[in-house]
Image 1: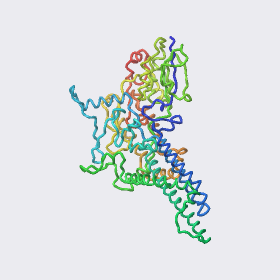
Image 2: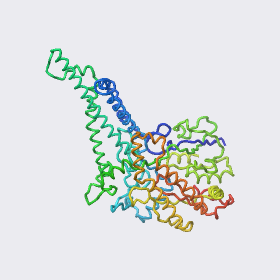
Image 3: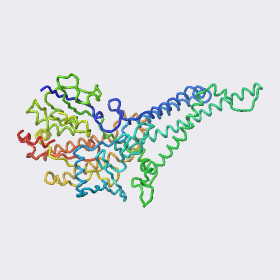
Image 4: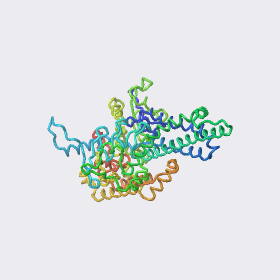
Amino acid sequence: MSAVMITRKVRKWEKLPGKNTFCCDGRVMMARQKGVFYLTLFLIVGTCALFFAFECPYLAVHLSPAIPVFAVLLFLFVIAMLLRTSFSDPGVLPRALPEEAMFIEMEIEAANGNVPTGQRAPPRIRNVQINNQIVKLKYCYTCKIFRPPRASHCSICDNCVDRFDHHCPWVGNCVGKRNYRYFYLFTLSLSMLTIYIFTFDIVHMVMREFLLFLIRRDTQAYYACTLELSTLKETPGTVLEVLVCFFTLWSVVGLTGFHTYLISLNQTTNEDIKGSWSGKNRVQNPYSHKNIIKNCCEVLCGPTYPSVLDRRGLMQEDSTVSAASAAPSSSSSISNAVPQTTNVVLRLQKTTAPLIPNEHTPDDAKPSIAASAEKSPSPREEHPPAPKVPPLASPETDVEDKTH
Amino acid sequence: MATEFHNLQELRHSASLETKVFIQRDYTEGTVCRFQTKFPSELDNRIERTLLEETVKTLNSYYVEAEKIGGQSYLEGCLACATAYIIFLCMETRYEKVLRKISGYIQEQNEKIYAPRGLLLTDPIERGMRVLEISIFEDQGSGTSSPSSSSMSSTGSAR
């Protein structure tokens, strides 16, 4: 009698399984460890700041004002690509809902037949023929799905990602189908920026030294043309920039080259590392168009796939709270939820979404509307009907149901 | 049109969910989005084979249109790249436009064909584009509202 049901609206990202962190109310999606991403950002912004502070005034005056302008544009493009890669959904495949998982289990059992006790069940693999090549689809025990071709499970983010390339700590996110082109453009533009800054650092130092040489020659105080430390004392930032650029060049340009090679063959890093299409046993890449231009066009100019993870959709969440205590204690998710999006509504009997489903009602809530609509004519105070929360494959909601 | 939607609502109000059937993806043509046209045996006495096949074929053609790599997708890609993809904040991509069309088509198919037969299609985008989910509701006649007593007894099985 003293139990009160609180129905709250939460955004779906709050209930998503997996080890991602979300910001800006679900608009931004990243991996859990972001330390290296901050380092990347710091290195890029720091080096460019030094460039704009030390090199650009000199070069704009002595060479051309177009140099800093182009540097600014390039810098903005690099940052835009980095943020786009880091903040977007790489192509995460949502986990199977319970009914789907059960359906697949039944199919597997039907296919395997009766396994005698004590014997290990055969591995769950589906074979599919793509382009005259047999591709094995593996079953993911975490997500309870058969992974589509080229998908892989990222253990760091605990998600299956479509067209999984690799998990990049430098961008703090997985690189998959949806953000691979942004990642590639990021490495490409960063290579260009690094080469640009490195080149103009050298040009700047040479110009200063040459000017000094001319001054000394004119004043009859001629010395052998050696690089004096005076230039470096005037522009100390240059040394730092040159150091950073020198070490960045090798890694980033190398990475860009590697990914250009992968794109021309329409392969992912994951497939390359595993040697899936290395050519032994006459195994060939079934996804390649055998034409470099076509492969590049497909990867870089292909359609922009939408995210199938509905992060900002609303869902109902119910929990019982004893009316005696002011603060809800039984439900752990309330403390996790971001307050700005919750609507705490006290109801004595549970009705979820509006009885008449409109286009905003999530489809998986519609069967529960049918279920709840039947229950509403007969309220039972002692035991409020256990709510059929639209399941989004999160173990926490199931636990809450059982605590009633 | 209004009458048909009324039937869909009544279906949701009065019917109880019996089971769900999942039509899987067809990967024989690669990673493009395509669903199998194989008819599930659970729907044998609920709907005609040709109707479901027609629906799946139309959906497949929509997805082919969305993922087509041609002049328009190149233009969109290059334009977006030139603007550092900021243009996607204001512009809807072709894929999203086709997804809206698909959602409208599924709604229409549900109203006209599936709801009167006690079935409900779920848009694949809500299942991660992995499956086409068909919910089978208990056959309570041709979509007319049934007395609540019979549906109350089946609430336990709806779980």
